[in-house]
Image (tube, rainbow over all chains, first blue to last red; front, side):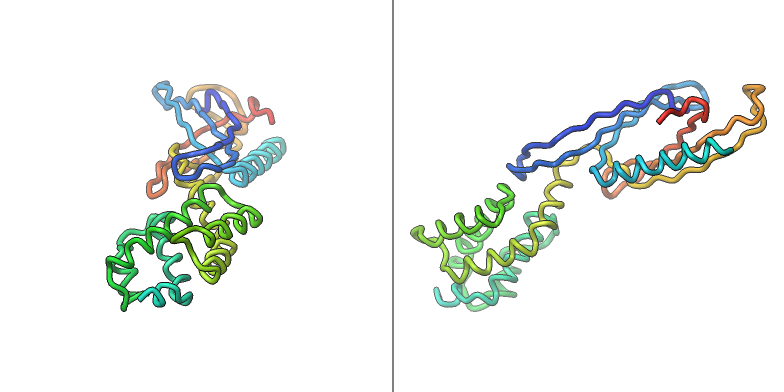
Length: 68
Length: 168
């Protein structure tokens, strides 16, 4: 079960492999509880296009859940 | 022998090979492989500094994510340097960067992503009529399956989101 959803919009400026990175990304931290109630953190990163797809999916879910 | 290195035909191939090794992380692209495939008549002692120079130039261009103005200025400076490149070589490098820039940049962005990525997302909406834990009747539930993992791995998680709590 989803307990909490945290997000962060970041900009990677530079790295050891590329001095001029200029790469925006969305980082998400999910707090999930399993059947026993134990809470786990899951974090992951998305590129902006990936995030846009992610957001579109959620919008679709929200629309459908209204109609059920 | 110097004439061999100045020839432009194999340079494009060399840049490709160097990019495969430096940016895309392809294993097995050794100095000897590149030499024997592209500059078979050049001895290794001459080839080594030459490919190092080209690799250095390519890395500088990629690291600074040069636009075309910066690229022209940079390559012109390289042609004027002692032990630099010829203007023909500069043209080959310029052409190479223009066609590979996007792909190389994407590869570098992936290299700097150390956290897991979202590799897949699928979902289902259930209209639950009854539940073992609650007496709620007809609570819509969204079940999402997120595939989270680093490249080359995949971890499946399932999260259940209750419909009434969802606000977007």
